[in-house]
Length: 117
Image (cartoon, one colour):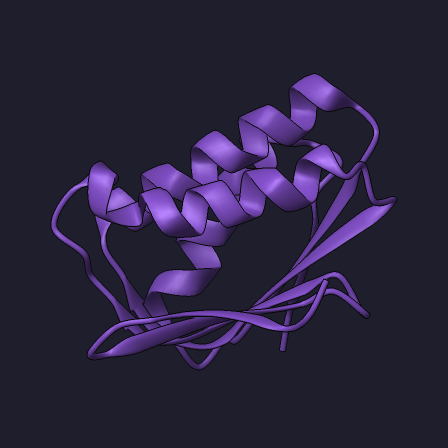
């Protein structure tokens, strides 16, 4: 699988299959859950390949609205159901929303490793 990218006006989500890492950048504020479907589908496609670890690098994601947080929450729940994949979330303490919102993902997926820098 080659590097994949989902791009919008203010954001990009890149998937690097070599490191099984998603790179989220910019401001992700799509209008509704259906608009997040391509990103959610890519996350699910990778999860269905049952890698040992999936990395979500959010260090350059300045903003994520409630629909985006909902998408990540559903992904965390799906990972928990599978029980085969670890998730590492990398965030930045310099971006105000990340500390609180990303910590909430750990409540849904207790095995999630949160790395804030």
